[in-house]
Image 1 (cartoon, rainbow, N blue to C red):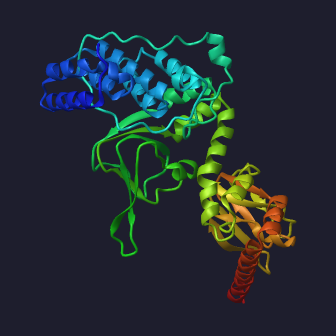
Image 2 (cartoon, rainbow, N blue to C red):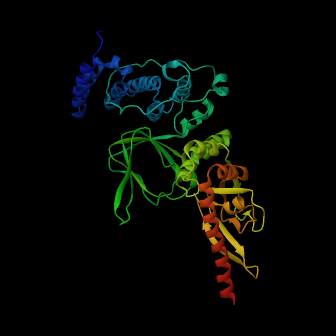
Image 3 (tube, one colour):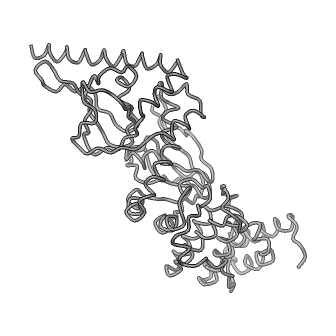
Length: 426
């Protein structure tokens, strides 16, 4: 068969799509069949052939074409798109579970069958169609023992980075692929944040309120974007809504499913914490008045030194009068800061939640804690050590100035709270 030039392929696709949109599936199939060899360069051709097969009731042929699509996407480094197609295959035939192991093996070997590479978002998928095609299966997976113990890492893809093959397969089993019609909201402002998403195809808009209360588009996200991570990790309510600007395909992973994975693969919790640090903590530090002056390279070094600590409801995290060795960022949960009044009564200073810092006063001044902070519910905290803060202050004098201002305000508020409470008691 003569080599296909780009103009010929483009004309054939336009013709095939015109037939497809009119429901003329056999004509669309014939048009796509002529350019099927080009599917190795444009997997959307295989995808559309699978779509047409489904429209004409031939699920077996559709699965064959979709497997070709998976193989071609992985070969090009588009792991996220391959995962979405993998979920489609299992949706058609739940017995096709072996595709999960095969896709993990192909991802680990990377684009072109070599070592793992860095997948990016693929071009918007092209259309698809029917036929009695029997797809060639992807290269056979390695032995079962190697599958279980393989230390190979998956490609550098958001959320799936640094997972070993067995861990990745568990995530594949849990992740869901969803089609979102244009104009439909994935979630709205105020909804509980219990899922994280990756945009496979299409575009979505982040919707929020302007100062005058009107709804405005804050950002438009394109293929490959990961979103919803702050609510996912913190459990906080969504601060903005997200809706499809055009028909979109997304991958969704719920917190409940991820927790289930962690029960079988404990190391995944550490992988998730590293992801949280790079996606959420780094952003919060960039927005914080205290950490804003620190450049990106130094922030990255700081992130590598952070640790995760957990406290149960009712625990005192820091105590008034104790020496302070740690500053904290609340990952999820709520805490109360309080002091003892003259009559040993408890005086509430503030309630803090996800994204708030506390404990910086004692750390920066080497003076005892000025208040007690207790967990209102089970909490997870990111810990900044004294040595880390000392290094920051030595390199960034402006951070020290900001801290001194914050400390002055906090100490003043504490003293004021004591006085006001005492006046009420008198």
